[in-house]
Length: 128
Image (cartoon, rainbow, N blue to C red):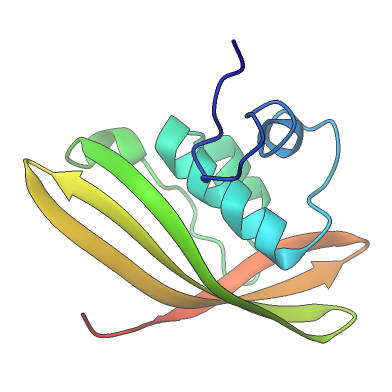
């Protein structure tokens, strides 16, 4: 049985975000990178999150294990706009629970491509 991809794409993990998280190939678009970063949060893959964060914006560490346990519930990509060959934005909503309480993260994220690889820079949160 094929393991589903946490990002919600209709193909399995190995054919979707798994190929990016396991470093067999770089994400081909900002949307694919954003989806794979969501999957990295679901799987606690700090290494991938830091590696795909543009160095000018990247924190020194994430330490996700110190955060309260998070149950990720799903991802909805609202829009993906590529503004030129090397810049794009992705608006998404990620749903999750902490301690039984439901939350929504609604963000428009910015991405830049450097040496053929997409990187997350930063984003703007939308009010709930």
